[in-house]
Length: 326
Length: 246
Image (cartoon, rainbow over all chains, first blue to last red; front, side, top):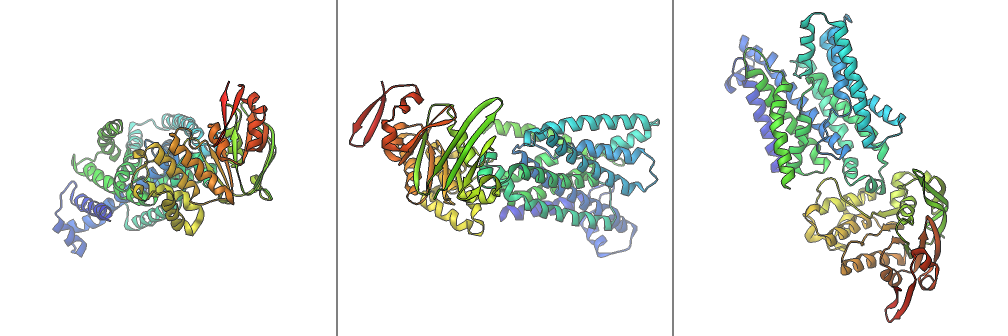
């Protein structure tokens, strides 16, 4: 119980700090005044721009934490990450098409939609390829993921070369790939919140099966789990979660890898507590990282994926050292 | 009335024939040891009977049902399987492991887990993590996980092979004791314990059953010698027969 209270308090603290941080720093008093509805421009900017952005970052973190926990559970590998099965390559291809191909639609909708479709489509493709190749187990899926990612990467490079003659549009593509939470309107934020809650519910349905498969495929089968079917369904569900995260936050590195780890230290490896704990940890990490991205080098903004990657590198080394010691 | 039967089982993997046309029928209340040299197909027979391996040809029946047509959950309630090696991927606590074993009971899982913990004397170990347990403790936890739901048929693959003699006897006794009203099929390496504790013995060689009968009869059967490729001297002791390679 103490752990949960601690996690919620850390997230709340992170959100307050993140709402204060930015190009122009605000004090908690400013935040309270803005929420109370004083009509000054400064307060309106806080409510219309910064607070939705902070909450969106937290929700992207929730999705990455959930997706990472599902993928690590399915592949029973603490180094598995949510972009493993082609979703990063697929999302990047979708975003590149949205940014470079003149489709005559509003980009604010097109970009998340195509990124989502690319991320999810790539994982569906990976499952399809592994089925056709007759390798339906986890190892077969990983290999199919490598193959699909290679082909999608090549396709994306081709689209970039073929459709951009000005460097500007290439830079837009690059900065999207490096990750970054778009500032949503309040209705879109509501959509994201509903989506995140649905993803939490969806992944919790898989908690028992993820625990079972953690006993090994033979024991999971002996205990009545249809392993191949479960792996395919869990991967499909996990990739929906990751695709939603990518659609709203771009390719944010390391969070999906690190959040389940930290959560496992706090609440243990059983998935019913692990999934929500991983969501809370992921939310805290992305909230802080997004605040750093906005506030570190004003007036420009550092891509969020760079912040998490720079912080994630040392974390990874610590993790390796910890594993070697135990 | 049979609990498990197999008819014309073939299992081929990568050009090798692991089970070569094997049929058997095992009754509802008996303890059956499966013995044979390495590579005889003992483990594969157990996995095929448990529904973990799918036979290339032939079929397995549980009661009146074709195993291939049963749902995974229904199969898991009928047949328990104790693997040769078990290593969970996450470092779970004893209470969590037993609870996962008991999940097949549905809403009675908590009671079943509590009973298994009491029965195998795991109360003091509940909060311990798997990585901190000794070999004997691990064997007890694994038994509690699998027997939390005591299914009509239990298939155990050399569960005690790496334990010391005291723990080995404990595990074998636990598996044999339940066979007064259920079926226990156990792959055994230790021939002395086999003939001392089990009612029935199956001798396998090269994917086939070469002898199957009451333990006393199989003990005297010379096909035992040819399966293992040694000549046994048969010693009679007050505790039963002992086999000594000549």
